[in-house]
Figure 1 (cartoon, rainbow over the protein chains, first blue to last red):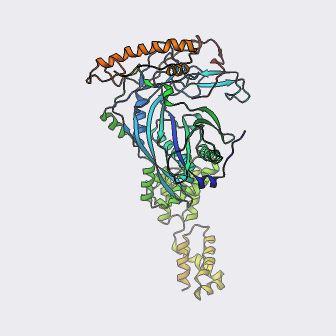
Figure 2 (spheres, chains in turn orange, brown):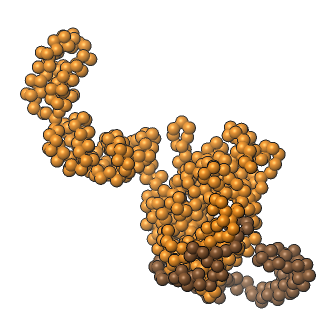
Figure 3 (cartoon, helix red, strand yellow):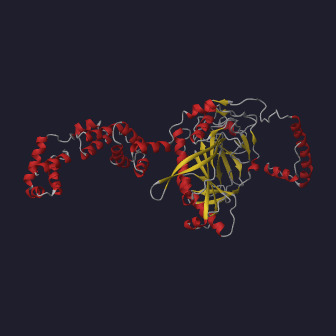
Length: 502
Length: 101
């Protein structure tokens, strides 16, 4: 029972996509949103529960101050306004993973609203293009428990005989971040979706408010997608695809739904507004339930909690704690370093932005720092299966190696050997130079003698150079370098050769 | 005064959402009663002047927070003590129809 899909180019020829992304972020607070239960991932079932998160009668919730702080910081990092006054609301529905029969959430008074995130999306020509994704809201709520379906062949809900529920996760603070419809992305829709989630993840990581581990569910993404006839504007009927839990899947799910919608619409059908489930293993979506109208949740203000009214002073205090946004930092470094877009992207992809920055701060030129970290050091990291930053090589030492090159103590070949020594943990660059005896020979007399010997041993080559064929000098330089066991400044050797044969 | 009547269809819908199985006779019986109750409550709107804002809480408090500190909760035995069925230290529930939210 597989879906009919329309070829990608045909989708784009006939339709314009509209994207919407809902991201749930589990905060990394020590305790839950409304009670003091622990939040550790992977604990034994039902060991982190209390009357409040189990929804037992008479239990009263109290809001976790750190969770509110994190919510505000997330909102500020996403350029949102912060509500001066807002409330929690009950979202009423029945499901076993939610013991209270309602989820404490926020409805028409989210704590953060009207923000945006500028996302760098790769273009086909190897550059990037900035797409502004508008944030409608970011609100506070709580996570649900986890169900284990028993009796079905695959652990899935269908065919299960009964289900087992662990409430350790119930009540862990969640921030739901909702975009406005993102229009006009066309063929880039899958990339925009992926780049948005990646950029959001990076911001959350920088804020230190969440583990943002998609594979553990601390960052979860729902993808809303609709198609409208090309160039007519407007919005078609959307589907909401849940369970999209890797960056790669975000991209694939958007592409799949676009192709599936186009097939349904192209055959004269209409899209059912429904929830769909993404299947990581097979790369398809399957139908879930039909989407309820918002009214069906019978939201009403939570009577057990008082309103949250962040003072403007508090908001400004929190604003002062925000790290430099990743995109701003990237743009600043690129400008200061004078890197091309490609050089910048390679540096980022190698995970070397931080170490290059530190190496430059220690005195190396940006290009030299990039050369070492993306060359010898990236290779060494790759060989040992480590992150470049975890290689154990200090940026200041790399800067020192470059300084030794710049002052003529090392040539490029010797410098690479010193880097090898750094990777092998043989000490500082100066110690490696001393221990391995790597400094270039700067004794002009010795160099001059070696050049004379090379000329004498290669009279034919010497004649060619005398006749003006300077390209032939390479053979003599090679002979000198061999004689000096590589420890000579090749440029100086060349000068000497040409002087003597002028 | 706002019209506070509730229709038979609205009662049926709410009963569905609340998983209460009402037959036609019960709907006929309940819908007018609920309308009377709503009208009575709605009369409060006539008493409140423009200077009385609607509230969701009787106390004029904001920002009641707790510090992010872990406190002991229940043991699994206590937590599962009232459950009709348990398995693998989890609450056992009947087969789930419909889909996850």
